[in-house]
Amino acid sequence: MKTASIGITLLALAGSAIPIGPAALACDRYSDNHGLTHFRAHQDPTDARIAITTEDGKVTLLLTDRDVAFQLSDRALRRVNRELRDAKDEQDNWLASTIVTAVTATVRELVDHSVVCHVRDVRDVSYRDGRLEFRGRNGRLVFGGELGDTDIATAFSERDAQNFVREFRLLKAKG
Image (cartoon, rainbow, N blue to C red):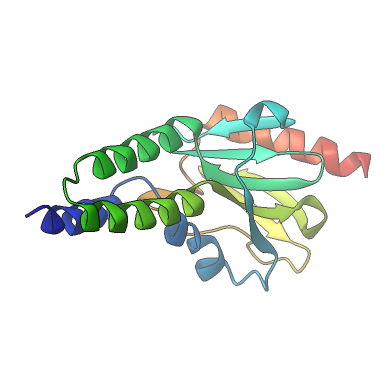
């Protein structure tokens, strides 16, 4: 029966190496950021001052004139959407298809967002000992923990991380 495959497919997606919505909450859960982060619709990396992607290609970090944002990379987002479409296409009875349609719409809504912090709420960004760190106005870490299986502090190449730090500091100096 296909109903069992629905559950298996959804569990596989939830446990996949690609972070989905609830996994993105790790930024809030591990960073004690006092509500400095929030969710916003997925952003176009071409509109950012700088956008860097983790070495595994799963997460993109963006800097705009107003925000710092983490989100699934466009490649990872396409993969999730393909997996969701495939799960929906595999259903051969109306009830299973209806359930999968409802669940995949919810998952799509979750993954198509960024975890965002306003630039004004970030005091500094630094790269030390292979770790990218975001400090809030209160001196505490703003982003931290993992998105899926990706440790966001160490997931970027040194060159990309340093370029991001430099661009952030130029933006903050502009005031």
